[in-house]
Length: 365
Image (spheres, rainbow, N blue to C red):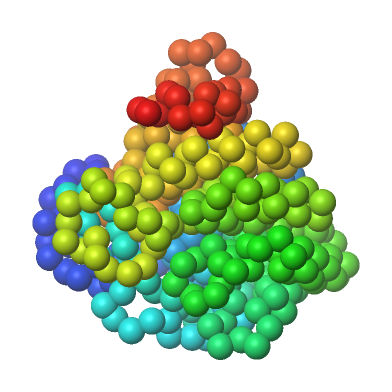
């Protein structure tokens, strides 16, 4: 039913500019009674960084930036939702227009610039829903004008750890000048150490250590990836998310909006992000779980992420083109894939083809 309604409404939604349509969608989910999706098939149950997920399909950060529609999003069938990015202090982000649909390419370019209502607003909303079902993570970002961005992540970790199921250090947004510089090995080591220490301080009062993940860019060289994984393993990070949006512009893009600056997401990101995921899986050596993001728009693409090494998957841009029923569709397809292979749990297939995918095989070249 929800898919049919989207198909009817899509022409009207796409007449609106992309950011207005986004805000209207979040607002509608925030006020509408949350749906009650059918129970997930046990074959989809996944354990990752100490949490139990009824299914591995998540809503990526960037959709619900201010934690306004968590329960509405979970009602669409997602196994978890990641809100944010959240900055310590409120900030408006970049001037509009800053979001562009590339309809022919099933892609989106955004240069939001971490527009955020700030950590206190998000903390209050998450505190208000404590005790409800659903796993909710928070994506952390630094303020644009911060004099010490590493300190921002420590402040966020200390404040939000008690109200989140997991936290994500986001140093891979391309829309805050200099943010990606924090992926350099020495800067990253200091940042993670400070964020984990702050997280542990919060744990002393909350009684638990909230899992801390690291989200990386798809535009890294393998040498850069080596350094990031080495730091993540040394510092005991709980997981990695691969990957954020890309600054690259594939030659296959057709829409004229490809000339806009910002991060590209959607279908064109699938191939590079999935290869980077496989490369990361091979380097991590199962020390911690991975979350695969980038270009997921079907069962086939979600299953490819799992075979490349993802314990969990996330998407967001595909909702623009395929609508809110996509999570349920992908879950049904993944259940069928697991049954077809004869495994008791889909998680048994994680990383099965990582080496081949890293070599450029099995994904179409």
